[in-house]
Image (cartoon, rainbow, N blue to C red; front, side, top):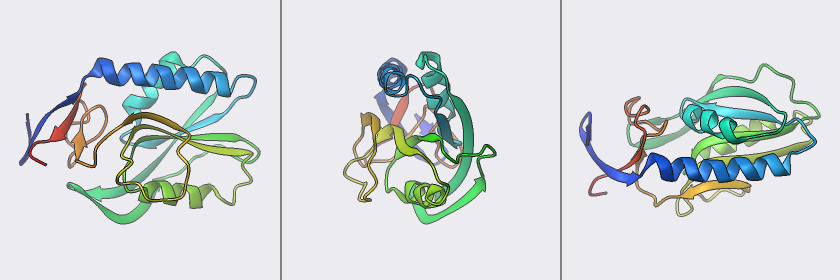
Length: 176
């Protein structure tokens, strides 16, 4: 499959991805039963992940979103900008960050710093996709859906220059 100037090949099917999300939702439901956590999705990539997660999450919760930017083309710029922030009060709350993918950890580092002085009761990170060989930050990822190799991927909410988010499956850069 070709997107703009790059070729990609199928890596994971929608069924495989959604099965991993259902398992994660079950674990989150169990861990947060009796509370009302605030889930904070990181846009734009997490929209598919969040929508599928909440089909299976069966406990009270609230949902909000932030928007960060750090990618240009195939690589992270290393500079993270906050484009949209949480409008709800997070003080005294259990906050779960929903990331589409944890790769270099630059966005995650920015989020941890951003929420550090907000008097949150608990702070955990849940990611659909995780690249263990690329992640070298000290922040624990409490919930991981699927481990990936370090290659560039697109689909299921992830993009290549804003293209490919609508793809139901996950594709990996060909010959990477």
